[in-house]
Image 1 (tube, one colour):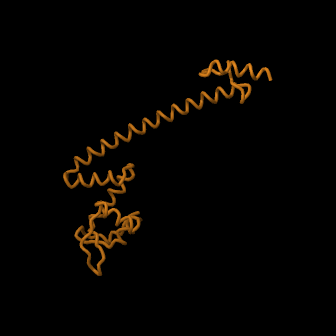
Image 2 (cartoon, one colour):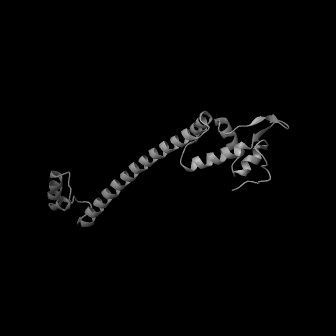
Image 3 (cartoon, rainbow, N blue to C red):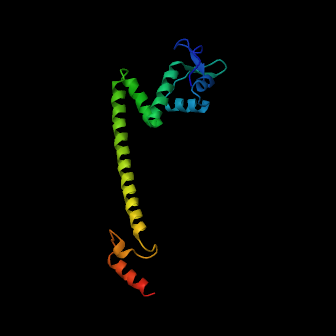
Length: 162
């Protein structure tokens, strides 16, 4: 999904919105939306009142795409763009991205632990069902971890009297 190198000679030139959108395989509406959010910049309107976009927006769009692949929202991406204006060295952006990545790692670990607990519960339930003689009767003594206790014995008595 590259762009036409003949179009981009220097960063002092500019592009029409449709050309910029085509370079990145996105829509004109997306470009306008990114501009509304402050992620892209346009020059004053010229040439029949059309917006022109400085070529530096190519770099911005590449960075937006990259940060989106990291799972960041546009609001989070805006934080990076604002931070980059305050700190052109990029050190604060790097530190922020490290922090966000660590947060996402911890969140994914929690999801993984939760999924593992659900798998273990399903395995235990499956094992109990595999050893139970009747599906609609209480497993009673067949149940390894019966939390109902007394009810199981009563249910077994009621079922045996039928």
